[in-house]
Length: 315
Image (tube, rainbow, N blue to C red):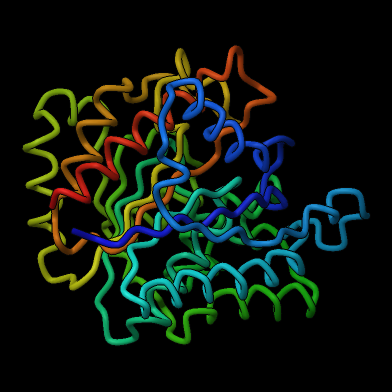
């Protein structure tokens, strides 16, 4: 049985829409509504955030609030690393997806010789960089950070020296660059990305499993295929962005997209991944209750979280 530790990251400075920092509390309210003792069952650590930066002028238009993101990367990577070193399995609950690069960095800090695989369950590729971003929001960049990619071939912006320095710092947070090889990333339910991101997916031949493929083959077969594909990896991190779910049910998130996963499909998929001994960290992100009705998104996220952790504990 694994010792689980919850790491709460109520930061939303990487997002474009306000409210994701409230997602963790919304999930806790969902647990109460379901009369679950989930959140008193496990030790937890809450990372202090820099959301005050949302009220300050933006200094870097192509990497908004990057100074705060740097601070968050130091805090989150240390929390994840310390948890792993103390033989805990970190379950990260984050506001926006930008800090998932810090989660990956934390795994690498704790296990520097690890060959890390990443299962990215998300409607979006999150492979933009400050050189290519259409929005400047860093929650669209964490995988580029993890694979140490500027994508200057597709650059549409020039960076000032300070932004470039901070961007390079983020890519080195895990003390190894790249933290993850592009070929060790698997996208599931990816369906909304820009040509600059597609360039990188094609350049590296990154593996993409569509919603249709998952539905045709079934969760069990997809899990087997993904784990076979990542068989050379010694550790695997699973990142679940709730916008991987279909927009019919994922209204409580900043960037909902149609043609996504059904709740049960996501539950089955993730719980089956959790049974594999190589899975070393799990993250749930981008719940935004301010965009929701009756806390539905948080309730769905909690159901998936609870079943995944139960599968993990039984593995």
